[in-house]
Image (tube, rainbow, N blue to C red; front, side):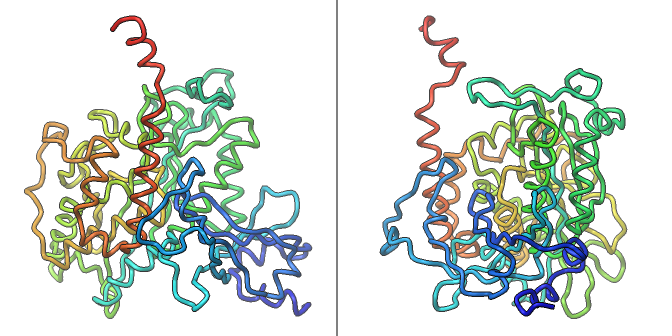
Amino acid sequence: MDDSLKWIEKIPQAAQDYIANRRLEEVECIISDTTGISRGKCMPARKFGRLDPMYLPDSIFYQTVTGSYVDIENIENQYTEGDMVLSPDFSSATAAPWTGDVTLQIIHNVTDVHGAPMPLVPRNVLRRVLSYYEAEGWEPVVAPEMEFYLVARNTDPNQPVVPKLGRTGRPAASMQAYSMSAVDEYGPVIDDIYDFAEEQGFEIDTIIQEGGAGQVEINLKHGHPIKLADEVFYFKRLIKEAALRHDCYATFMAKPMGDQPGSAMHIHHSVLDKETGKNIFNDAQDQATPAFGHFIAGLQTHLPAATPFIAPYVNSYRRYVANFSAPINLEWAENNRTTGIRVPISSPESRRVENRVAGMDCNPYIGLAASLACGFLGMKNKLEPRIAALGEAYDADRDIPPTMYEALTLLSENDELAEMMGPEFTAVYTAAKNKEYDEFQEVISPWEREHLLMNV
């Protein structure tokens, strides 16, 4: 093998299989920005093979979702656009099967010029939270569920989003959860999603029709948080590419259509003892342990402040509507999908906690980090959960912040959570969200023009 391609021996087998007997043309050297957008550089495979140092400016992480920049008072030389050093994480290498040339994507680790992890990088934020678990001898396991919509092309932001036409020539129907014929309506897109996932070496657990018109859910097998966050990061791109092949959009917006349910990223958590490999939520008598209750209590206590991390945009809060397949509070119960915190039916050794509050619009690294941070604080501080809910949790008081503004206020008051996520990251992230909120407030909606222009 050419010395410039020796690095191929370090990548996963699925990536090696993808390029076997073909000429690898390009390598995409990528990282996730704060919004979850893939950013980086493309280069010829042989140039990448020299493994020269690679740099990107740190200003990437001072941008909002609109592309504008935030100013932070206590960060010196913020806009000198200092270089970050990127190094490939070969374990993350995967195909980019929708490209014209044979291409691999590789997520990169990001440090400063002295080798210290850059605190603003979402993947590093998740690593920081995991280091708290590691110090206790714990290893969290997660399983995300991804909900998204397949919608008609929408090139004019002033026009509402509408469901895509199915193979019958009719718009996708709503209220058809788990319908096999509804999934068949957009079977060609689903087929490409399966094909891309297989070529990338990803294992899909299930694909189902969700309750919204053209809404799909993909469940992933449980695993290490970094690995699963990488997969969600990759999946968002592959799903969008599959949709574009069939003249439609895939959107992960939390609430793209007002009369349809929102899209969540439900997160299942369990925690293993690193020494024994056993689930610390289950005891020798197959009963729930105190740690199980403490984890739930951590979510109940800290998720309100963590909401900006898992519901990151003004649109995110439109999803929290009672009787619309979304929680409005942090009640918990077993086998009850109206609660914000659900304990699914499982064998005792698979006992786990599901966070149903997180939206699919969140950055997967940041969303997983925030949810795990809340649970950790509950276990570390031995917090006690509220009594489990009986019946529909929609009858209980709302305790999920109803707006981004109120969520950011709660975050600013939670020093424990900020420390776990990283004080510098939290400060920059909060500033970005405040700027986005201020920009949103400058936009006058069609509702205001329709009902207020001539009536007040």
